[in-house]
Image (cartoon, rainbow over the protein chains, first blue to last red):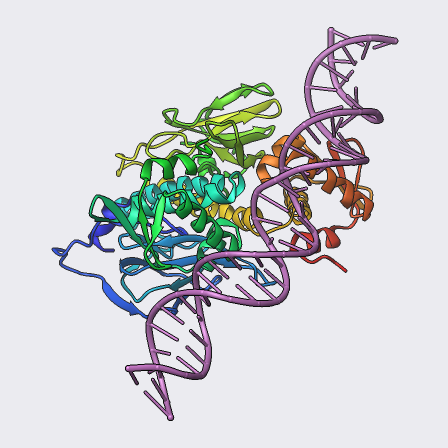
Length: 229
Length: 229
DNA sequence: CGCGTAATTGAATCAGTTCAATGTCAGTGG
DNA sequence: CCACTGACATTGAACTGATTCAATTACGCG
């Protein structure tokens, strides 16, 4: 396993956010390129690798027989996807932009001996992810549409925003349907919420996929459930 | 750490379901008794122990500043609660019936050396929990009230039901508000759903806290989103 | 028995969905 | 260069499932 695993910070599906890939490792991990729309793995697939996102955005989701979909998480550069349960993947995973991945071997459950440092890192990462999922729970179960949307933008603001003048800009890699399925809403409602946030001068939309946060404080207040009135 | 940890099966908050407590261990863990309504820990508390439920039911929840609450999980005998992230508990945890707990030491993140078998067990348990939380996600985000309620009863049917004649019976330790906060509904809606399920002869209510499942197949069909019409 | 808590039921309201129409933009080919 | 196309986003209007608030009803316990 690659040395980057030593500094885990995040998990999805279970997955770990590793530190920036260490370029001084004597055994750099394999890398893999994925184009927009390509699946990395499906729910139920046998799992013996974990993948660190080096570039791009991946989407983790559960799909039901009737087609309803719940997006579990988005994985950004530094995140890792593919940690299995019972040696199987438990979600669908797809590249929503072109992606570069670093491929790591995933230790099988029978390896008690393996690398104890690795095991510890994976455990910590999994515990972090549990907390992240718990945060997402509150969002999904106990918030109104506008709060959900504000919270989602606030999340991206912390994770992937770039400065632009005295504001910050977010490039949305995901479309409205992806956001809707992450928040438990319809695309139409997400769109209306973006319009509402724009009307309140909390954010501006350059084009549909480029958000400029005009009032981060108010955004966070909205995200926490205050109406601000 | 107690030998029971060797057979983990479930996590909440992160938490592990250990095997039934092994009575032949030379070093039995401390045990602790909790009365109904007593909190075990709060969100943000320092964490250095994990707790295996030996008897009773515990409730794990996130509470927001404005009082809204999301129940993350219920822990039944065999489950363990208290696995921390960053050495802190990430949820509120309270006994909703009188409980007996087995107290285990929780290894700190700095212990790379510790018991590798233990670490591996904790990791597997955490990965299992991630999958469980993912299941709960679909429930919370992508299902109607009746489906949610049916799915909840189906869950308890698999976990804690007892045979009664040719049917199975479930003793609900949690009240309607707890169920509502688990499913992202109001107590009134949960009540109406129980009434509806009773009207469809899927289940019968002896008293408000005693469910008898009359038609398990139909219950599961409803839980999966089919209207059955 | 009577009190307090929890559950149920009812009626009105409302947030979000659904369905349909319109608008926007990038890519393609005449 | 501009018209056409297809995918996605936005907007509108009607509908509906769940919530809210209020009124009973049922139940456990002193």
